[in-house]
Image (cartoon, rainbow, N blue to C red; front, side, top):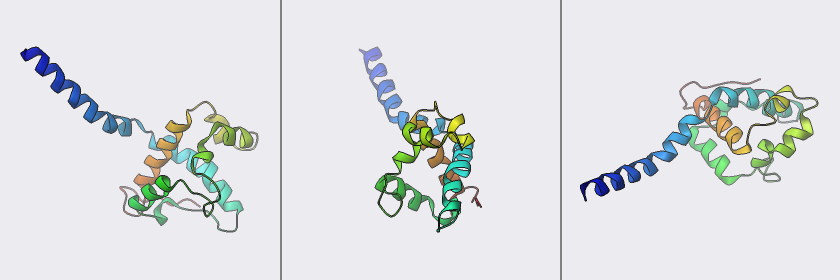
Length: 129
Protein backbone atom coordinates (compact mmCIF):
# COMPACT_ATOMS: atom_id res chain seq x y z
CA UNK A 1 0.00 0.00 0.00
CA UNK A 2 2.82 2.41 0.86
CA UNK A 3 4.57 1.68 -2.45
CA UNK A 4 1.38 2.48 -4.37
CA UNK A 5 1.04 5.82 -2.55
CA UNK A 6 4.67 6.66 -3.26
CA UNK A 7 4.27 5.84 -6.95
CA UNK A 8 1.16 8.00 -7.19
CA UNK A 9 2.95 10.93 -5.52
CA UNK A 10 5.94 10.53 -7.83
CA UNK A 11 3.66 10.40 -10.89
CA UNK A 12 1.81 13.55 -9.83
CA UNK A 13 5.13 15.30 -9.22
CA UNK A 14 6.45 14.32 -12.64
CA UNK A 15 3.30 15.48 -14.44
CA UNK A 16 3.47 18.77 -12.53
CA UNK A 17 7.09 19.28 -13.59
CA UNK A 18 6.55 18.43 -17.27
CA UNK A 19 5.74 22.02 -18.37
CA UNK A 20 8.84 23.25 -16.56
CA UNK A 21 10.98 20.57 -18.20
CA UNK A 22 9.60 21.45 -21.63
CA UNK A 23 10.43 25.12 -21.07
CA UNK A 24 13.95 24.23 -19.97
CA UNK A 25 14.49 22.36 -23.25
CA UNK A 26 13.92 25.44 -25.42
CA UNK A 27 17.15 26.56 -27.06
CA UNK A 28 17.24 30.35 -26.82
CA UNK A 29 20.45 30.45 -28.85
CA UNK A 30 18.84 28.68 -31.78
CA UNK A 31 15.85 30.99 -31.32
CA UNK A 32 18.17 34.00 -31.49
CA UNK A 33 19.73 32.81 -34.74
CA UNK A 34 16.34 32.16 -36.34
CA UNK A 35 14.89 35.45 -35.12
CA UNK A 36 17.84 37.52 -36.25
CA UNK A 37 18.23 35.82 -39.62
CA UNK A 38 14.59 35.26 -40.53
CA UNK A 39 12.33 37.64 -38.60
CA UNK A 40 14.65 40.63 -38.62
CA UNK A 41 15.53 40.18 -42.29
CA UNK A 42 11.89 40.42 -43.29
CA UNK A 43 11.17 43.33 -40.98
CA UNK A 44 14.21 45.21 -42.28
CA UNK A 45 12.81 44.91 -45.80
CA UNK A 46 9.36 46.17 -44.76
CA UNK A 47 8.35 49.74 -43.98
CA UNK A 48 8.24 49.04 -40.21
CA UNK A 49 11.91 48.20 -40.07
CA UNK A 50 13.69 45.71 -37.84
CA UNK A 51 11.98 44.79 -34.60
CA UNK A 52 14.08 44.24 -31.53
CA UNK A 53 13.09 41.80 -28.76
CA UNK A 54 13.51 44.64 -26.27
CA UNK A 55 10.60 46.63 -27.74
CA UNK A 56 8.21 44.50 -25.66
CA UNK A 57 8.11 43.20 -22.11
CA UNK A 58 8.01 39.48 -21.36
CA UNK A 59 4.25 39.71 -20.74
CA UNK A 60 3.73 41.49 -24.05
CA UNK A 61 5.63 38.76 -25.92
CA UNK A 62 3.56 36.08 -24.16
CA UNK A 63 0.36 37.90 -25.17
CA UNK A 64 1.64 38.25 -28.75
CA UNK A 65 2.20 34.50 -29.08
CA UNK A 66 -1.09 33.66 -27.37
CA UNK A 67 -3.02 35.98 -29.71
CA UNK A 68 -1.29 34.29 -32.66
CA UNK A 69 -1.72 37.37 -34.85
CA UNK A 70 1.07 38.82 -36.96
CA UNK A 71 1.15 41.61 -39.52
CA UNK A 72 -1.68 43.51 -37.85
CA UNK A 73 -3.74 40.33 -37.54
CA UNK A 74 -3.46 39.30 -41.17
CA UNK A 75 -1.26 36.25 -40.54
CA UNK A 76 -0.77 33.62 -37.86
CA UNK A 77 2.47 33.83 -35.85
CA UNK A 78 2.70 30.04 -36.12
CA UNK A 79 2.94 30.28 -39.90
CA UNK A 80 6.39 31.87 -39.63
CA UNK A 81 7.72 28.74 -37.89
CA UNK A 82 6.00 26.34 -40.26
CA UNK A 83 7.81 24.04 -42.66
CA UNK A 84 5.81 25.62 -45.46
CA UNK A 85 7.18 29.09 -44.67
CA UNK A 86 10.74 27.87 -44.19
CA UNK A 87 10.57 25.97 -47.48
CA UNK A 88 9.39 29.12 -49.23
CA UNK A 89 12.43 31.15 -48.15
CA UNK A 90 15.20 28.57 -47.71
CA UNK A 91 16.73 29.32 -51.12
CA UNK A 92 17.53 32.86 -49.97
CA UNK A 93 17.73 32.44 -46.19
CA UNK A 94 20.46 30.30 -44.60
CA UNK A 95 18.68 30.00 -41.23
CA UNK A 96 15.48 28.74 -42.84
CA UNK A 97 17.53 26.15 -44.70
CA UNK A 98 19.61 25.24 -41.64
CA UNK A 99 16.54 24.70 -39.46
CA UNK A 100 14.35 23.12 -42.16
CA UNK A 101 14.08 19.84 -40.23
CA UNK A 102 13.43 21.37 -36.80
CA UNK A 103 9.85 20.68 -35.66
CA UNK A 104 7.67 23.78 -35.81
CA UNK A 105 6.75 23.67 -32.11
CA UNK A 106 10.42 23.40 -31.11
CA UNK A 107 11.45 26.33 -33.26
CA UNK A 108 8.59 28.45 -31.93
CA UNK A 109 9.57 27.55 -28.35
CA UNK A 110 13.19 28.49 -29.10
CA UNK A 111 12.21 31.90 -30.45
CA UNK A 112 9.82 32.47 -27.51
CA UNK A 113 12.67 31.66 -25.13
CA UNK A 114 14.96 34.13 -26.90
CA UNK A 115 12.28 36.83 -26.85
CA UNK A 116 11.68 36.27 -23.12
CA UNK A 117 15.38 36.53 -22.41
CA UNK A 118 15.80 39.57 -24.68
CA UNK A 119 12.61 41.38 -23.66
CA UNK A 120 12.64 44.89 -22.22
CA UNK A 121 12.40 43.36 -18.72
CA UNK A 122 14.27 40.13 -19.59
CA UNK A 123 17.56 38.81 -18.29
CA UNK A 124 19.50 40.23 -21.26
CA UNK A 125 17.53 42.84 -23.25
CA UNK A 126 18.45 42.33 -26.89
CA UNK A 127 18.55 44.61 -29.88
CA UNK A 128 18.44 43.43 -33.46
CA UNK A 129 19.12 45.74 -36.33
